[in-house]
Length: 168
Image (cartoon, rainbow, N blue to C red):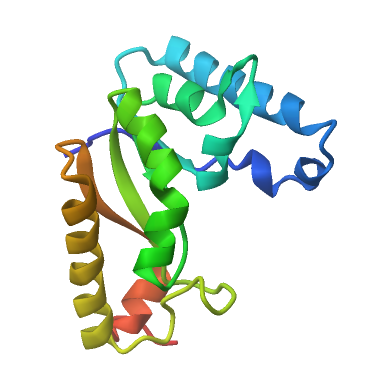
């Protein structure tokens, strides 16, 4: 069954993001991209991957996270930390903005190549499975939101490798 489209368009990955004078144009361009997408596919379900830092930024006089949420059906918060409590603390302002916009959301967890403290890569499968259940319970215990839809794991190939389903 086809459910919708997921977009991982990251203005924060562009080198100009670190240049504060050019950052507003990147945010404005992101909002425009999703406006164009929504206009082209008004009835299509759209999920947007978002960096938690977006909740601390403004564009056009409005919160950047809230503006992205207004253009999506759901958002996947890429609060990548291998410590669930740290991930949740970092994501909390984003969750507040998304909840305020009345949108569904998922919490991201990284299993691919990334710096220590960010990825779950190399975690034994049984420990990883248990940690993800604990992470999900931590989220549902803190937010008790009907809009929370579970975890979004980043890097399928690494996840498959973790569980021994592909050669590494």
